Length: 153
Image 1 (cartoon, helix red, strand yellow):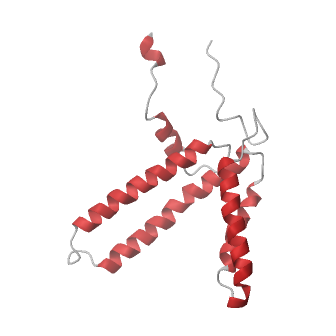
Image 2 (spheres, helix red, strand yellow):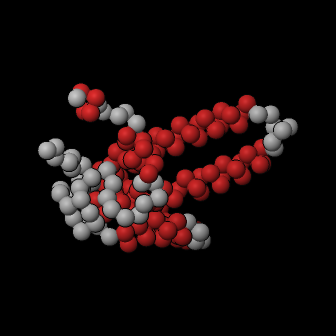
């Protein structure tokens, strides 16, 4: 009977990886923190492995291009988590448009750099709010509360 109540330490990791490309529903703050930790761990292992492989075997430029592709691949689950965090707070995914707008302003000429700096500050503040803003309690229009534990019968 005690075996049925044993806590699986890898359950959060499995939950994060299964939901990594899910744009529907809600997500906990810990999901994003755990995903970030897993990415940092994965990239660190890859960088270590890359440093062990000589530059004669794989040129530095090829390694850099591979890491750029990896970074782009890593961004998609992060965007999905941002969408689910917005849903967790009862907000629409349209709030996510702040990111490409701020990024687009980075390409403007020097006259617009102050506007870009203001947008980037807003972007950083919105990221902090997205991560630390409290969620709506209980179910909302995007689904049940992910922190709610099922009642045992």
